[in-house]
Image 1 (cartoon, helix red, strand yellow):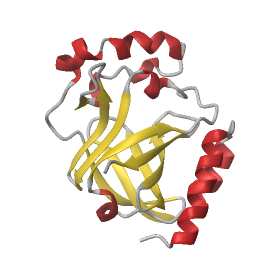
Image 2: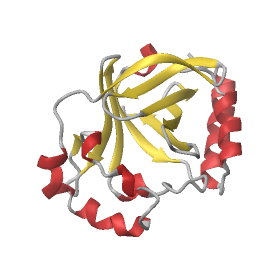
Image 3: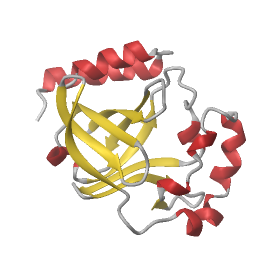
Length: 187
């Protein structure tokens, strides 16, 4: 449980970060100031995602393609990518079927047809099997919940903004700049 005053301050700082043209250094400053999020604190189902624009080459990519968020059912049952089809139905996607190599190499607007085609692509992208797991991991001086992808060299590390909000950063092998995002607990 996060103290109400510190959670209110952290949430206000996060809103300001999202509203501004933030830098990675500003996002790191907030991330490093936040308390750890433990695995047991986040394994409660579906979380809706949002990007934190920091000038990263991937900014806008996930939102433009219909990314919804993540699903944490237990430490070993995690869906790292949920997407919302044009019909609004949310479904888990196998990360290996997402062409991440295109991120930052094509204009974000070129991805718009992907979102419009998600209904037709759903059978090809969908997975019924967990594709990640959660572990408490030491990162930047704190042991916090981290999502480890099963088949990709990616770890997402989370810090707690408040009881229903997480600030995450993607640690991907070969990614020079940090990619920040927010998760909001679905109620």
